Length: 357
Image 1 (cartoon, rainbow, N blue to C red):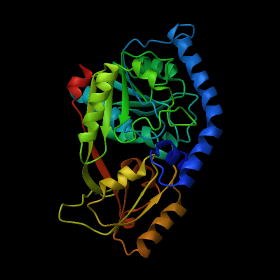
Image 2: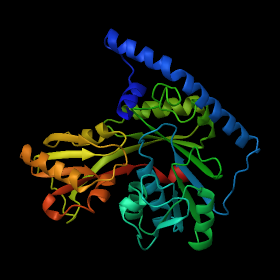
Image 3: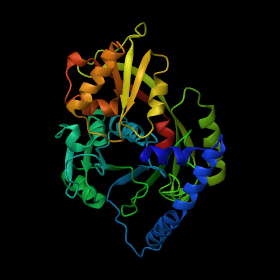
Image 4: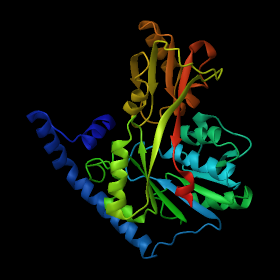
């Protein structure tokens, strides 16, 4: 159902009468719940705007990184890039606040996934994104809690935070921020322009006005479309808009850390459990990918999954298995070096100085 809805949300052209009739039926069925969802969002945002529902302002500089749509837009790598810039360049003691979606830990209390020095939980407990952030933002604390106010207070009182980053926080109005960054995918953009469940929007497009700055994430090899879209957003919403290009860096063995060299092109099986898997596979198009396998977003891998992947590798006579770094942190726990699993590392290219000034 989730895959079907995603295709419906982002499909713009209908090639035959059957597709058009299906789309018309979906619009009819989903319009009513979408209207009530929009009504609830509007009332909630109005109450926060008029200060009827109070927001909490942390005592330290707070940045929010989030999006308007469901699914992946690249906000987690952007969050990591900001955290590393603040820690390495600005020498700020930074803490990332995450909800901890997909992990086994209860997020009713504050979980210290990383204190900036030690990573305290495995990916299956922490959730794939908080764990990935902990491993890729050394020196930065990572907390998970559904109550971001409680997490913010904990970070200031116990981790001596000088700066907070609210991961996936655009809709979290209970916590005030000094810089509100909206992340948009250059290709997916705003789906069909409708809110859930009719479209992929969590909020109506008018809420873009709450953003201080916009980042258009480009996951394609050509950034022409991303630059055009960024100019459009800059002109329409009068917001500073930046392009962040996600470019392939290296493919490395998740157990030995050994990279594939430029002259190597082994036959491979690729798999992922992310919101937009086709973009990951597009990064591998210069490699010899024999088959791909998709799992639900935030999927927790089991030994049966690993056996299925190894069977696929054997069936197609592939040499290695490749996945995303987000998936690698989860499957590493149940795999070994002999499974020959590699991860594709992506590198965000973004003008951090201009973004944070």
